Image (cartoon, rainbow, N blue to C red; front, side, top):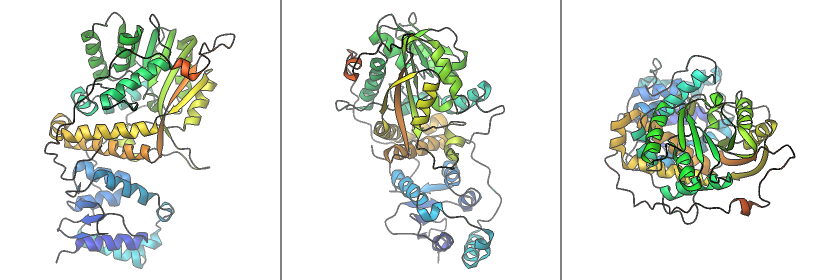
Length: 462
């Protein structure tokens, strides 16, 4: 009689001392775990080996990306991720430190016997091909940063268009009450940035990490500026240049394949940096902040839009997510918003406004996940099943992290004051947010029904 799942669950619970939050279906067809809980399917022994060699999120990610672990039909990915995250935060699990004595004791022996019967003990399986290998060179050197950016962004503009939609904006949207679609919310975010920067005709804008050019295009079209956008992603630059040419704005918008540390042709009247500073790194952040300060004209404004982590507990070292570091953003680093404000001030900026958009990012990520799932077969054709799974997993997990305040995102508005200390900002927030673009946001139609997903479990809901 098939009972492998029960043996595995009982052994795990005995070793951990707490009930597991998920049901497990083993490759022999047996199922065990709390009734009604989300169900994980272990397709083979290799799934267990991945979890044994790398307990925690990295092992789970490797098993899922490789296809050794699946979600059972009808299982919602968000429910699985919520259950795993809450389980990992339980005090008993946070305090758990398995010692050799625990493994050779009664509970440990039962776990080892169950694993032996399952044939789970064996060599560490090779990581999936989608896992990034550590690039050579010093962390956050220019060459290593180029390799890290290429891993994430040079996966195909068609794939990003599928996920992001026509806006091609890869940062959180701004969900005003009137925003009825992702496109409208992204349009509102671009316009919010332009208003915070106080853009006017004839001004010169630098967009650091310009992505596919959406912000510089919006600023040139609706605010009459000339703009320079820089990125170190070759595929982003190629599409951004094509979009600029198609818009007939090549005389006012320049897109460069250039590191932010190589920009020398200031001054600029305004600088935007949206979703880029997460790649800078703690060691280079002072270089980043001081470089932008030098490039900005006195009285000019900087809009720094950046994801933030919660502060560490006293004496606790910052450890980035191993899944995010290996599969999504190699060498990426998050800082608390207070640390970012301090670094900008140390560089000479006066910080005038900080706005949290945390809930906005949760909504945006759910839209991106829904876009991916609705066109899953096409996504797999474009980038392969493994990479499509990476994006699905990371975007869904990130949505929950924003919603549950495990990470946040903030727009920091700073100015380079003049020699007399003048900021040239209007006296009130309402005044410097007054100007609006005259564009009418494009209303996007309802999403198409999901295609055959290949992942078996229930598509997520927005």
